[in-house]
Image (tube, rainbow, N blue to C red; front, side, top):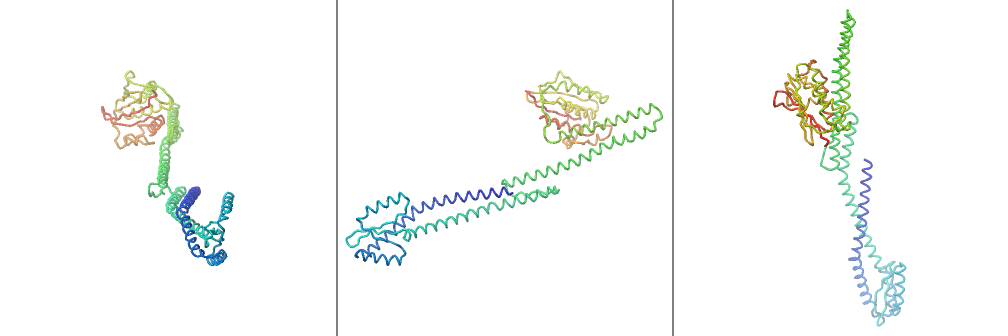
Length: 431
């Protein structure tokens, strides 16, 4: 805020400086066009009056008359014979070259003799005119100051008011009131800044809400395996045979593995949930990664057939990551296998710009209103919330964020062949 005020003051000073220079220029023009011609006219009028008044007098009488006029009209003058004009003109030229002040001269005739009447500057007519000119300049400068000051107050006051409102809103947000918002008035730079502040506040509020939701979901998801582990430990003490003890230890190891997978998925999700791209895309072929993922998915659930024919795939080198992209395929395939009724199909089509992987299942499908929610963390639809379906609700969220970091996308659409769902993965080709 202080820097803003400093900039405003500097701009005002620059405006005043430019205005003063322009006023001086205008004043010089006015002086050349109006003041000096007026001085010449008044000098001519004075010369005529003096000529009429002194014309029939001698030099002594004229000097006496001038002395009376000097005391009454407050000016100083002297009469110089015209014969001395050349010397006077030479002296005036030397004075002008040296920067001295030269007194104006009026030609008068005393009886038959020509004279030059010299009016001295320190008390003469031109001094009065110069004072008037200075008064005009000061008055003009005052008008400029009033105009510039009024314009500055008119322009700066609304901006300062908006900035103070924004400062107050930011203070409220900093104190924990995340509902505080800036009142937007107009469409200037300060108003646009207020819009950005409101967007920032919305984002902070959303992030904190997501954080609370994530903590609640994590605590809920971890409570289940933790409870099973505690129950298994109690049952382990009651085991009567070695075989029963071994079976309960295997159950404990399975629950610990589930807990480890949950923590691994959570850490992976948090890594990709910061909105930035933590991966450096690599160029590779999706075919071998897809084949490996399909073989792994066939072991997840018996009775589900996975149809795929790599010879029909159209692939190009794409931007992927050798560590995290297989996880995307594993998560999407695992989701399809869990919800399929009898079969899952995998197809790959491509062009020189994009590669599209479609994973289709013949399950119950996904309602249109939930097709975006399934890519949020810990979202499991009602039809798949049973423990039997497995998963912690992070697989599709991780897949979405990994693909986003690689420049790709994933979306769920209706299957035209069955009642199930097609997960369509789009990757950017590297050629």
